[in-house]
Length: 294
Image (cartoon, rainbow, N blue to C red; front, side, top):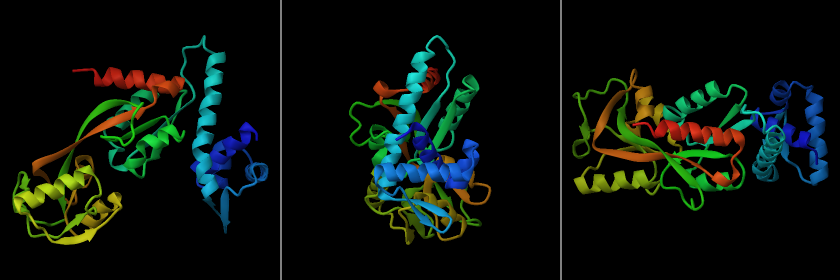
């Protein structure tokens, strides 16, 4: 197995196919294809299903992503040791972020990092399930995760508090509501879009509070896909409780109000301090200097 094969494999994963990988790497498409075929022969596994012109990861391909990214970070670490006399930060910062949190503080921090270290690059990936927060770090998929606390099986990881995220109510365009917060005990008679019961700490807290206050809104839809809620609200299917940053992003179209009582969750940046790259350590220093400010 060659380092170049691993690099090409990840390029195909991150650029949605051979064409995108070749463009990103600045090489010919047959070069990428041949490297992948050679890697599959050496490993005696198929890493991608070839469907027409598309590439879909196999189970073996999925399992190779984390170790491959760790290999790239390890190689970058060796290069850092050989050039330790230089204070310049290069390499790549690997983050996975829960989609609802991919705005606000973390974007500002990444922007500051890039301004301070323009030769470093950033991979900003989606964390599909917050239950995987600790495992994606330990399995090498990324250096950092941004997600809501608490983390399952987070022993040994360091957490930096990035603040609290509040949840607001959003209703379809044209909904008539008085100004100010909407009390949970007196929700308007508009069907709601919810995540399934037991879908997380916050959804369970909201469910308990609704039952305590005797609120029983009609349910228009239940979805496991949290990112589907804003489009459902805008399409008129029903109202929903959304992360404040998400709700405010659609307030020019939807009708958005704070909720009473207030529901919040703490957001944190998590990482393993023992395995950080030079870029990772620089990012931690920047985040700590930002969050330590009064």
